[in-house]
Length: 94
Image: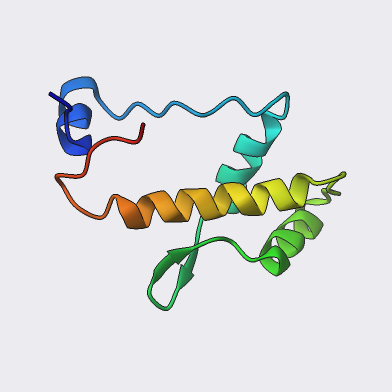
C-alpha cells in the first residue's frame, strides 16, 4: 500500500529528496533562495524570468549558459507539484 504524502510525513518526518541535477547542485540552492514559486492569481506558478533576473542582479549573480532556463523549469515543476498535491490524500511523488 502506498502512503499518502500526509501519512509519509507523519511517519518519517518532512523528508525531501532532490533529483540529481547533473553536476549543478547550486541550482537547488538558488531555487530555494530566490523563492521556489511565485503567487499567481489562481495559486502558485513558476517564478517569471523577469523576477529571476531581478533576484540575480540584486545579489550580484550572473547566470551562465542555460542556468536561468533550468531555474525557471525547476520552479515550474515545483509549482506543478504544489498544485497537483493539493489534497491530504494525494500520494507522494514517484
